Image 1 (cartoon, one colour):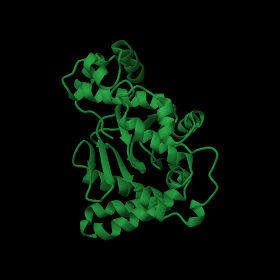
Image 2 (image 1 turned 30 degrees about the vertical axis):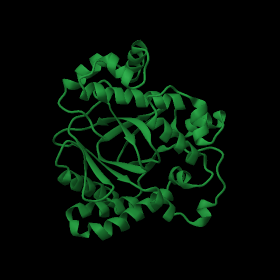
Image 3 (image 1 turned 90 degrees about the horizontal axis):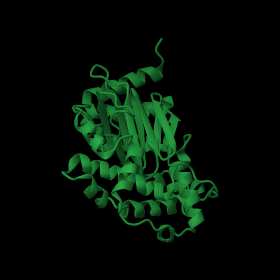
Image 4 (image 1 turned 45 degrees about the vertical axis):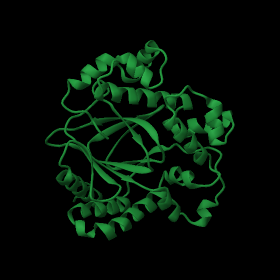
Length: 309
């Protein structure tokens, strides 16, 4: 007999498939819910499309497998697991197990900081700040009660008159379960006064805006209101990379986007993203993506589809 979890997973995949009317990622009528559909697998020797997480989010692969790399961390996940992300990160995703008959399907739910605060009790907000910061990206097992709430939310795609009222209730329920789940601390720390994660968010926001500028760790530490050693330690604990590695990934991912979308040569692109040396840019680009900039762009433009996540 098919268990309830399997039934819910199958229903979720069927609803997402019916509502995914285009290749790639698309928004939906439900605020903060997007769905993705990919009909081709994309491996590390094929396309790897970078993307950024700008809001606290969870990702559920409802059909297929996805690999995610951020800094030194690598995750492979699919049903019955979900990924929880707490802050802005440069991420690389790879899609596995995808075909036209059985596409790779996933959903993303975004949460506002105020929504997290509203669901935390005063006791939870006053808990002692932990010395070790939590990773901002984690994978956790999806239990049946949380899966049930997600299915109820996604069903609203086919009952759109109910979206204005019920979507808010279901989103609140899902967020509550995430906050009190295996990696809820990663979300709690970003709204807890005095938590290192609050200060690291300020550092990340500064780097994202000023990624083209020469790296100045003292200035970033000052923005975050931390000492330089404390900045490095907590930044690495939270993002799985150092501040300068974070900036480098932002530069290289933006460079890749420019090379694909704009009629620019390699030297122009390197300069636009902040590199003074084209040779250094080519070396670091090749190390990150596995191909020189020119070869990478030719390879990408020779394929039918670029992965969006």
